[in-house]
Length: 161
Image 1 (cartoon, rainbow, N blue to C red):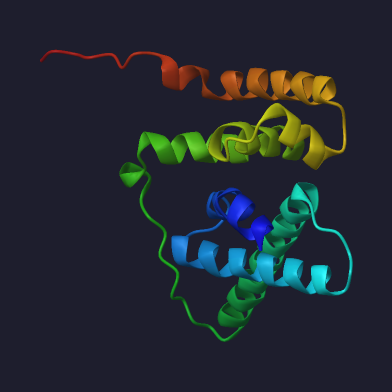
Image 2: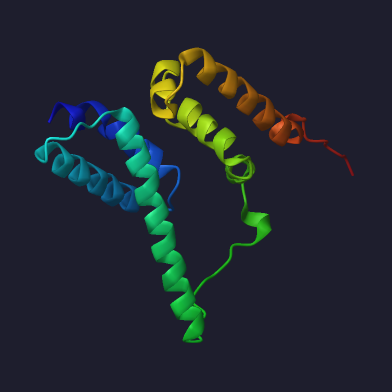
């Protein structure tokens, strides 16, 4: 399947940035391509936009599954979730957290352009718009991301005691 060879890495990267482990990302990516194969067998088309949308839906389903699992654990009175202390959070985690706090469209555009390294034409195809519109939307997303990350760019103040 040429589609698999051409797009596997893109879809894996897309999913990997949205889930907690590489192994989960691999499993979900395989699920996306299983769905794509089934769709192709039924005589329907599969393109980058379909793969990307399906990947987002599969990740959403995974989040819902996890939420149901957590709710069941809470209902059963089990407390197996540990929360890392804020002191252990490194700068990359903080960048990711701030990007996740952007509005949905801006966050997706930043993921597509920087984490997934999609071209402007690929982004436009996924969004179903012209490349010019995609560039304009990405420009707004970059501005929002820059504002969200502004204080991280400031050099750390060093005090001597």
